[in-house]
Amino acid sequence: MLFVAESAKSKIEEIRQQEALPEDYFVRVSVTSGGCSGLSYQMDFDNENKPNDQVFEDNGVKVVTDLKSFLYLCNTTLEFSGGLNGKGFYFNNPNAARTCGCGESFAV
Image 1 (cartoon, rainbow, N blue to C red):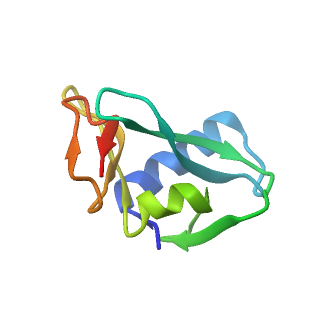
Image 2: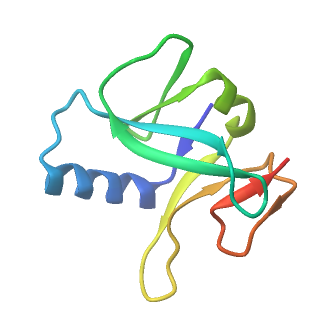
């Protein structure tokens, strides 16, 4: 399961309205190689399902990830932090053994 915190839900809804995205768009999350800790998160809006997609809905937000990425993201919560010292969107990932200082990459 992938989870969506209330803070992330609010920001996602705000972006949806600003970008005038149709209702069939969902949040796609994936993990790619790269970053100072070895693996990086990617997040975007998408409206095309792919083979082996894992689909979750939490807090009224549909989140989709590929099967390989899900192995790294299982039980992760998508969060948002704003303000002067805010990180923006970030992932609270219990599977990460270490993360980089900026929080955009991790290792397992």
